[in-house]
Length: 488
Image (cartoon, rainbow, N blue to C red; front, side, top):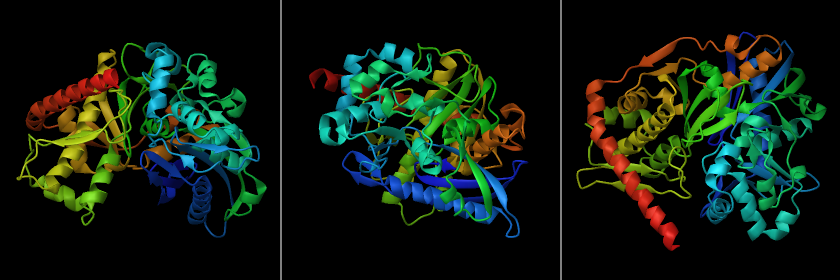
């Protein structure tokens, strides 16, 4: 189960890691100004209905199977529960940006560098639970007083499936109240936010088998004679495993709702603004550069300005057009993140005139993802790590045009697995290792044939000037935000 931001996905795999069924459904959000919420109960019911649907699709009618359900998905979104284990209002999405002022308070109280060396995150963000919990404490004290548990979305689904409370460690680093060195919750930050550790789930390693699904739920799953639930791992890290990223010199790009880069490193380097997390391999850290922007920008633009065209038609038109050097999109509509950490962000189109139409603007939005990718590749290389290969997965990887555009902007060959659902595949690998069918993730992670997208030197030259302009705009924007911070 991939508990995604845009879509929830359920995929079924055999013991030989062959995908035999896949279903997905979009997530419905309730947006009010800078708040983004969703109904936790509806979310869980959707998840369970999809488990039932994929089991029915995957298991022949004359058979019954025992299932191993592995959860992966987003981290920062969370649910507040009362003492009766009922949700206190809607779940809060990571896209919710209400806690900007609280994020500033955290910055003022905890030096960023010391916070970085504790949490593995270069700076606090309003996307993370620490800032939002402080917001609830300040703005809804009556509701805050009723909180019995704070569960991330995956924790909540695990609890609903099994009755067990558990917080697997790969998702904790996105809370800003977890110590990646001690592998415990950060007590000083919890105290500042007003949350005791007793209100958080006990910590467990990635890939922990929690136990049997609730009998009442098991009886509702078609052709099922039993099921265990596995905590799995963060979606980006599951995707990395699915792509076979277990060694140096190679990174995985998640080209989904958000853009991210994932690679294994032996130890954190706290001199560069890249985040570090615990992951699937015990003696290594996951280097994780995540932008809260990426495919979400293109989805937003298409939905609002080109709703009458499919993605394929837009790209077909773009193939017939040249690169517009003057038209730029600044893509921080969901705030900023690696490697440009700021409290708030904004989207900006600049350099356009009467020549440009919505198709040109669509290209600028797609190019901005390539610029974000390039900035994060540079950050990884600046810390001294080799990066020779990039494997891309997610919705954006299905577009040859977008992959070529990013390869040209970054000057790096991009490889795309023929299996498109790398996150679900990686989650299935975690389950197969837990069952003893594969001895290790390394043995399970042979990802099969890769489609190679080499970059074109002539196209890369075209993008050099445009990328320089993007960096200049970013520097200008940062200066504006700095002055705003000084003047209030």
